[in-house]
Image 1 (cartoon, rainbow, N blue to C red):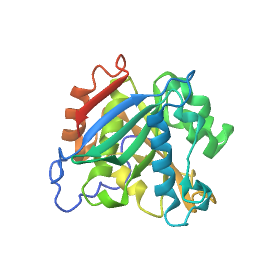
Image 2: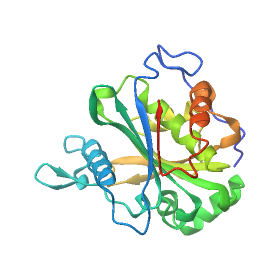
Image 3: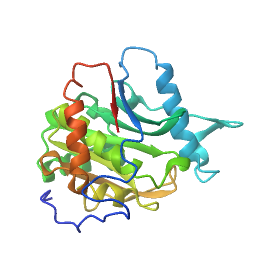
Length: 245
C-alpha cells in the first residue's frame, strides 16, 4: 500500500481556514501516561467511564454499560499508553480524549486484534512500517455537548503531534465508519487501508484500519499540529503535560 496520499482530498469544515478552528484555544490539552506496572490511576478510571458513556450512546452499544447507570471501558492497552484529554474553561469535566500507544505495546494494538496476526503482519509489510517507530492512536471520543467546535480534529492533530514527539514514523488506528470518524481522520491525512473493513457487533459499526505517515503532516490542521509539537518536545521525559489546545 502506498502512503503517498492516493485518497481523496480532505474536506474542510465550515468556519475553518488554514487548519485553525473558529473555536481554537478554547480548551486545555492534558497529556498523561499510565505506568504498566501500577494500578490504574483515578484519572484513567475517569477516562474509561467517559469513553464508555459516550460509546453507549443511549443504548446503541449496550456492551459499555456495566450496571444501572454505570459505564466502563477497561482495556489492557490503556496501560503504558499516553492519554490525551481536553477540558474547556469553566467546565471541569472531560470534553474529549484520545489514546496513543507506543511500540512497546504493539502486542496489544487494536489494529492487531481487529485484523488477526497474519493480516496485521501483511499490512505492516505493505506500508513499510518499522515496528520500532510504529504507534497506534485510538479511543478518540468527544462529548456530545462539545461537538461542532472542531475539537475532534484538534484532538487528532494533538495525538499526531504527540506521536511525532515520541519518534513515530507511521501511525495506525481503527476507526468506525457509520458516524464519519474515518472521514475526520482523512482530513488530517490518514488513509484507509484496503481490505481491512470488518463489522464489529460490539461497536455496531463497520470498522476499518487507517494509516498515516508522520512526515506528511496534518494537512489543513498542520498549523495546529506544528504549534502542539513545539509544546510537546519534552513529552518523552514528562509524566504529565498541559498545553492550550
